[in-house]
Length: 224
Image (cartoon, rainbow, N blue to C red; front, side, top):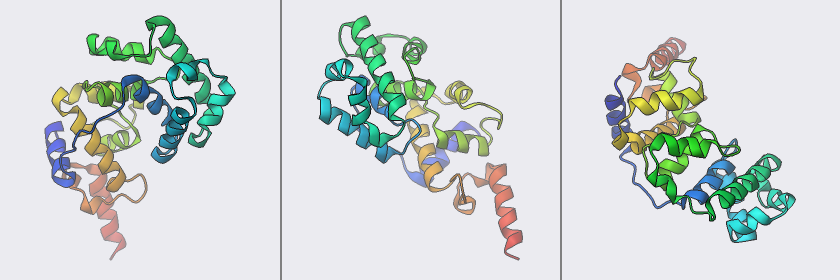
């Protein structure tokens, strides 16, 4: 299947995603960092606690790391993430004189991505989340759902790493389609192409998906 066919079929199955207002770039960065290796509910709770406890990013930057860790404890890996958050805030404040990351909009996309990835704990997915969701730039985040579905339907090889998948898929998807592709691939991975017990018989991508065809054949043989 081509990327265009995948996008069209996903839109048919899940609809066209509607863009919603998002956080400012720095808030999106901290939220994305908190979302690493935890559930959406836990990371959102941790972010809300952090904002409630300190109020401003300047206060977080100056706070004791143990207090920051306590604020985000509900999100998991708080003792790893707290020092990273402080280090990011201190570096941004020192280099830029403020906590405004809107300057990323004035940089070429690759340079903006590289700048974000130079920050502690920020990889391709976190950087892409900031660029796509907060700054509306065509950077494709490859989370676990996008990665799994892309491998199963043959967009990327099973040996491709998640980091390399950002580059490969990012080159395949047209800039205007990045948001829709990401959102619907995530929806598809959660609702249909699940990690365990995928619903291949209900998947509109199954005609071009060798993984799905094998799963349907196995289910047919088991039901005899």
